[in-house]
Image (cartoon, rainbow, N blue to C red; front, side, top):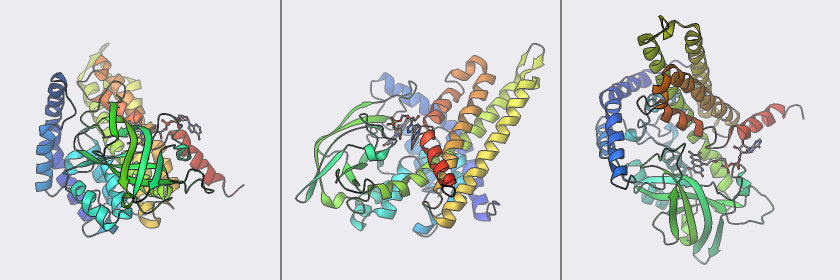
Amino acid sequence: MNFEHSGKVKALQARLTAFMEQHVYPAEKQFAAEMDAARRAGNPWQPAPVMEQLKDKARAADLWNLFLPAHEGEGGLTNLEYAPLCAIMGRSAIGAEPFNCSAPDTGNMETLLRYGSEAQKREWLAPLLDGKIRSAFAMTEPAVASSDATNIEARIERDGDHYVINARKWWTSGANDPRCKILVFMGKTDPEGANRHQRQSMVLVPLDTPGVTVLRHLPVFGYDDAPHGHAEVLFENVRVPVTNVLLGEGRGFEIAQGRLGPGRIHHCMRLIGRAERALEAMCQRTTQRTAFGRRIADQGVTRERIANARILIDQARFLVLHAAWKMDEVGNKAARKEIAMIKVAAPAMACQVIDWAIQAHGGGGVSDDFGLARAYASARTIRLADGPDEVHRNAIAKMELAAYL
Ligand SMILES: Cc1cc2nc3c(=O)[nH]c(=O)nc-3n(C[C@H](O)[C@H](O)[C@H](O)COP(=O)(O)OP(=O)(O)OC[C@H]3O[C@@H](n4cnc5c(N)ncnc54)[C@H](O)[C@@H]3O)c2cc1C
């Protein structure tokens, strides 16, 4: 293992950092103001104009689709190379989209790259890579414990040249966004199949297919996350051509394993950036304010938290780099223990560091003025999204115990 970044990555880090400082951080307030204005006007489910401007600038600066894996063509980056760049984007709540590197699009684009047919790539991957449309991933269901994906009840029934889909999904992130045109949908094509890991399939469902209804958005601790949002979606006798299946019937689990690896580690990389920014805010604030005759930074408890925050962030950073390196070396499947480990460690680290930063800001910490409350809400969700902590810990323990049982 050599974690020294290559010259190519160092150059990209410098360009990305400069872009964030010049364009993205200054746009954070404008983005919030535009979304607030849209909410007041009664419809926050529309793109913020400033985001479209940022996307144009990032594309012009050749900082576009940086997530694209190295093995998928020229110019791509390895997971190890992308990790520090994704962390820079993660410093801002609006930091990934300008570069077309947002969840769940990166996971969906990688899915289409790996498992899509040429026709599926032409129709959906091309506009996604171009940033013209967005996508969502519909697996979780309100009626069943979806952390166990074998529970999924969604039905995908074959009828001639079509599949007929009936289901209720929720937490379909991004489906509220009018730019979201395509869903990667998981359901059962063979509910009674002997192998319970071959009952599921993934099918592409255009959002405008008759029978698809976005019922509502689900707020996260009160945040609507507009214009992206997290949707409850009803599928009533939705018909899509059988050619919309990804890879083939019964291959849904296999794709989920491949898809969730990169998606999970991207969340962790972004959280490292977000925690770094929270620590910076904590240091700035506590060196500027005095309580009981001392700077808050001079209180022992503050110093201890600052030191522990640095330790936790760097621990998580090295675990992420190790998981990324392993994915590059042996593939996502063989690196599943390392991916599960960082998926537990990074959100816990970010929640702790952001919580300390909130405390150090006093009442300001829970307001919207410093972005910390929103950052906490977002980091907390990653302890659930893409599988709850407990499920990943179980998987780690199973692999650890395998040699003994
Ligand atoms: C903000 C956000 C965005 C999301 N985006 C998406 C998305 O885009 N697409 C999508 O399909 N889903 C998405 N999800 C859903 C997410 O993946 C699920 O919430 C998660 O997988 C858990 O499933 P569940 O909610 O059904 O919880 P359940 O399966 O009901 O589990 C509840 C709890 O039971 C406990 N538990 C479960 N299994 C075990 C175990 N083996 N051992 C011990 N305890 C256990 C855990 O504490 C768990 O949190 C999102 C969720 C959030 C919060």
